[in-house]
Image (cartoon, rainbow, N blue to C red; front, top):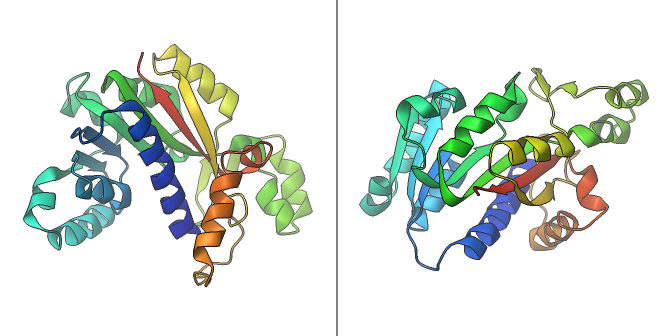
Length: 242
């Protein structure tokens, strides 16, 4: 359930930003860095955009290719899957090659994110949109606190490091720091959303509720409303290339 909610919320927020920046019907050049199974990349290809997905995990690449193989020819022709990661953008692509660059759920695995972000910003054409989904470093105490792990919650106030559900030691990002970074690389923050305010602690394998649309409406409203969005598990930040 968490993943379904996250993907749907990010899709709605991304569509809102694209609609506000580009003419209706324009075929955009999209780069999805760390595309995973290709959920957002494939959705944008279905919408008529030219999409390049960059991924380094062979299992994820294979899963994305299997899904793409089942799509109509026109969609298959609009989506390209490449092996690589955010550090490789300058090797594969020329500066200004894309209208939209996605980097969702990737920065938490990057020890030094600033060079990666600078590379992503260079890929954007003038007025292009940079879409980042990151773990919210200002709210790391929320998850252990809601689980009743009081020692873990107390420790989370002092760090941006955490262990994710798969057992990997990763890192979170604070919104103020990312805002400063985006300004410094020429893609200042345009708007931001919270993702996963009420569903972050849903159990693994939780079924979708019968009133899924109501759940999504609540999460969507909270994700753009203070103070709720500030305590979300994830942040969706949208910068614009100046």
